[in-house]
Length: 149
Image 1 (cartoon, helix red, strand yellow):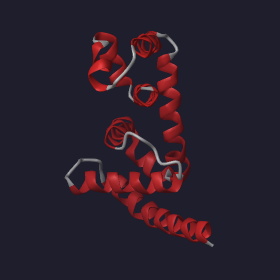
Image 2 (image 1 turned 180 degrees about the vertical axis):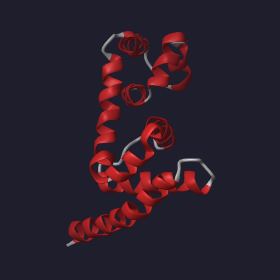
Image 3 (image 1 turned 30 degrees about the vertical axis):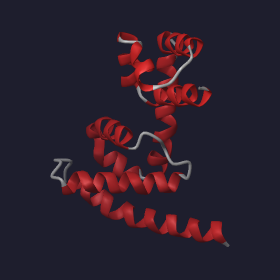
């Protein structure tokens, strides 16, 4: 059951929405994960601890940093749409890629799909994506060669 406990904890840290849901209905943990009574009590205590909000913020900040550093034009162009776009991206891709260039490439693909689907993100976003996405693809390709040589 330890694996289930660890998965539940990781899911909670990655999802403030799940934390809120579990605060309202702790039994969600039992429905989603196979937990011992002690593990269940520990997770409920963790979710209700005031520091959990900070834990979720740190997790999200760690996922945002590679995007902000490697896709600054795109992040700036998204402007007020950035928080919602990130929330949707993180809901779609619950777990980040430890290879930050792959995470950035995946974010570019996500934003490209939003634009293709008709999201009104604006011309600035499209232009930033057209400039930064090919550069990101080249960087991913170069890092792949470096890792295999």
